[in-house]
Length: 258
Image (cartoon, rainbow, N blue to C red):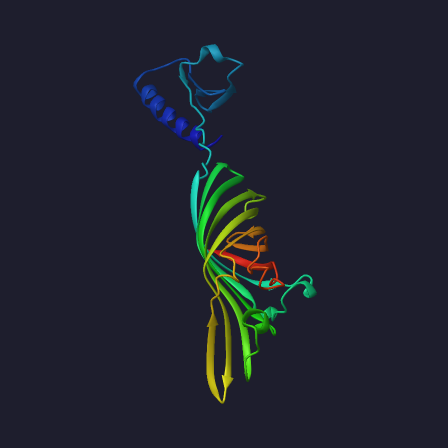
């Protein structure tokens, strides 16, 4: 007998005990509660209702409360931050880089629509930057090698958007696929070094050598608020008529939902 039956039975016993105290009865009062009939006598007697269901003096019915299923949100928003590292896959086909010092950073906001509990589709708006530390790239970019000890970097600042799809694999794990496009509003080749003991830094911004638009795809596995992803860039950073080869197209990284 569950909690609801106990409450009903207690109320019925209180009601009937009051009635019995005010009148003399030769036959016990019978109370039907659900599938049981209770005879108010000493000792208390409980029978199945289908044995003597027509002789109950009082009938009490109850309904089992129904639970409304928990609804999932149709729309959600997420702020995120991520970072990754360039991965040369075929070193001879790419500009030589220092892998540990070649990275990307991004911060943005996702807007997701959930047509079902296990699927979401949406878009995002983000800022991203790419920084590649190059090896002996100055002749390709500026036509000569700087004097003294120096370091070379290619960097971009971008505004991007794209399409994201996410499939829920379990309560905590999901898989996602992204296609994105970037507009590089700042592109520069940087040389940092020392000449005659003095620190120097030169930036070269030649619009004929750098492409302003980029596009790529990304796939990842998300566990709770952390996503491990792999990214591939389809487009060139450089104009192939002026600079070859390209910097690596692959990168791997982590993204965190805030």
